[in-house]
Image (cartoon, rainbow, N blue to C red; front, top):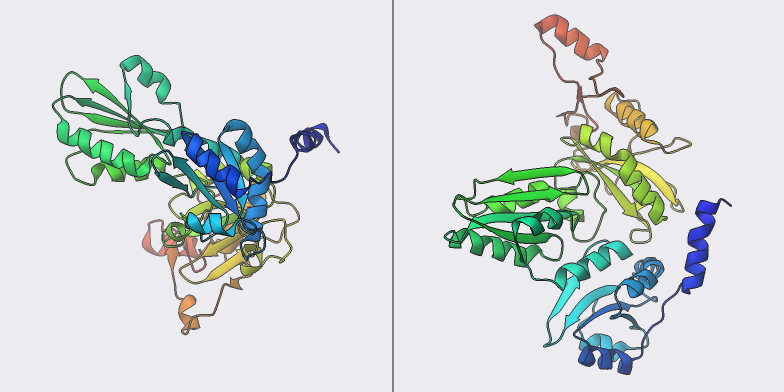
Amino acid sequence: MSLKTLLPLLALTGAGLGWQHKTDTEVRDALKANEHSLVASTFVNTDNSDASTALEKHWSAVEDAVPAALSVDCSTSASLCSEHDVASYPAIRLYRQGGMKHHYRGPRKASEITAFVRRMLRPAVVPLDSKAAKSFNKDDDVVLIAHMAESETSLRERFTEMAGRYRDRYAFGLTTIDEAPGRIACYNNADGAFHMTSELDEVDSMEKMLKKCASQLVPRLTRRNEAEYLSSGKSLTYFFSTVEENLDSWTSAVKPMAKQYHEYITFVTVDLGEYPDMPSLFGLPPDATEGVAVYNPAVGLAFPFKGDKITVDAVAQHIADISEGNADAWQVGEPTADEEIVEQVMEEVPVKGRDGSKVETEETKEATKETGEEKPEIHDEL
């Protein structure tokens, strides 16, 4: 075993991996005494037990970072969980004095959970001077800073209202400038992207800008975003793994290709602790601990990767094979009533070489000869 592998295992052993659940009395006392408490409600004897088990390996790190974090086992504390309307597991909530609570719906990993707590414990909009703004723009994965004059009360109110709705996911700051017009700068530090606009007159302009800026090149699948990606009109390339480090490594490695194909394909990582049944749905072995599948929701077809080793280059070739009709399809769910229509569904996705250039097929070459102009490659699958 390599040192790189051994050290995390030793760290986990030293930390006493496993739930250290509190009793009903301990939880109630903490909620009364603490200004805030982060509570994970789990239940390992339900259909969601895999998700509770997946969270378990992260929770000790959460407790180290958030002193007011604790967990409760709803199988032995049923009345307490019922009292707090816990209906699905695991449920992660931040409780504040006065009865206010905030639900966490992001990826169940320590870094994301602790970032959520940090966001919720500061003001929804952080007042900034010009000096503070330069450091605050690096404070989170996605940071929005509004530069607005005192007179722009309507813009300030709209920005504050938006921050109140999205503060659990992103960081918001406000700096006052001498003269209008105001502007908003958005820093997507995770992907190294920057957006700025002063076109804020439309009621939904701020939210559109936020959505564009915060869009991730390689998102993690969660209950909150799964419907969004399925209805995006794009194909999805799923990378499945049971190992958090592998999910993170793949996210970093595949970003250049995700940027190359972003108009047509969304690359998504999936924690199999959260979604243990997904591989078999997309044609991979039911007991797979790692895998890749390309899925077109519009036609219900998946293309499981069957190579020996998952690499960015191998997946790029897999996508090219799909585009050229050289990959086996897997029907996801029930076949459509008009199955022959699937063969007629045409989407324009250019096949690109490793250098980013478009690869011509015989069909596109013939089209060029006939019309005198290049046409993007047409294919059925993606």
